[in-house]
Each structure stands twice: as C-alpha cells, then as structure tokens.
Length: 261
Image (cartoon, rainbow, N blue to C red):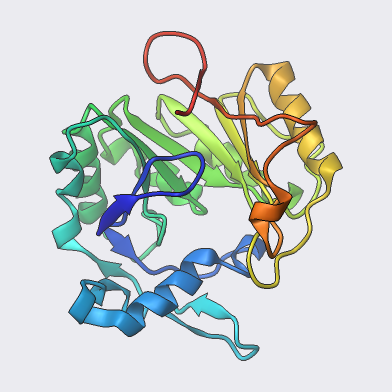
C-alpha cells in the first residue's frame, strides 16, 4: 500500500490508486506498468489485489497499462500513521488525475494530505489539464506539491496548465527526457527533475539536453535535480553531470533551497 522508496528525489511512495492509460511517448517503457504486471500475478494473497487487471502485455511483448483504474480505500490513511516527516511521492503506480479517478476520491486523498502537515506530498501527473479544471474544488495545503511530466518539447504545453494550479510548489519531471527542450517555460515553476530512461528498451538521452535544462534552471534560480543517465544498467552510468551530483530541492519550509538527505 505504501513503502519506502529508492527513487532518488523522494523518500516514500503512497498509492491509493492503481492503474493508468498510456498517453504520450514517455509511457512507452513505463516502469510502473512492468511492476504492476508482476504485482497482479501475486494478487490478493500478498496484498496486491489492487493491481489485478491494471496491466497487460502489448503485441510486441512490452508491459503496458490496460486502462483499468482501481481505488484502494485501505491505503488512504497510511500517511497518517507515519509520524516522522517524509517526502512522499503520490501514486507512483498511477495518476491521481486520470479521468476515471472520481473527484470525491481525489478530495479524500487531498484531505489526508492536509491532515499530515509533517509530510510533503509530491503529486505527479501527465494530465495537468484536469488538475487545473478541478483545482478550485480541492484544498491546496502548503505541503501539497504538484508536478507534471514533460518528456520533450512537444509536451511543454502541460506547463501552462500546471501554473494555473495554486500549489505552493510546482515542479516538472523531465524523465524520461526524450529530446532537447531549448526553451523550457520556468515562470511559476520551483523545481525540475531530469532523468534518462532505464530498463529494457531504454531510449538514449544526450548530455547536451541535460546541460541545456540545467543552465536554464540556474538562470531562473529554479532547483535542479539530476536523477540518472539511465540505460539498461543505470547503476553503471550513474547520475553525475559535469563531475558532480545535482540534488537541489525546493524548500517548502523557511530557509533557502535544500538538498535531499
């Protein structure tokens, strides 16, 4: 239902929703679909019932999300039992703003986040248009961060919807970064994550693309986090850019930009 995370820019994941629908090129080799396919085989006996029916194999054998959305009522209150402050990635295995997630359930997720001010919740969506449409119906506590995925220059339009959302911190996930973004609109954005695709079939990411974004963030004083170069063996390629790690985080508390522990 929820767990610690090896994702470099967060500390835990929380999945009150399972399942998704491919929507853009960044979904081609989705790690979450691969994991969902494994978890649904385990099924109810190991507490993974919510993943049943959410993933399948495409004609070419790739794991893909099947478009089925399952709501996990039992997972809703999990963050309330975590007393130590954490950065929590919301729905690493889904998209809270998928069209089939009811507004009432989204409100309940937001209510839990509001009742857990010790945590910062990192909500990431590929559907910021729906986020903006529903924004005035949701309670945007200061500890709720809102982000969208931007995998290449064709999807920077998502940023226009994101900046309409009244989150205290708005962020971009340029992962997998699939092409250059020479003009990344950063007004109203507080944090940018960049990473290359990893795992089977990983598509390459050019150094120039990463440096281009890092320099744009530096010029706008936007926190920049470089997650990984990626590839089939991401541990081998590492996560250093120009000889150092970029671990900048936006500060949601008093003080300057922080680095994740």
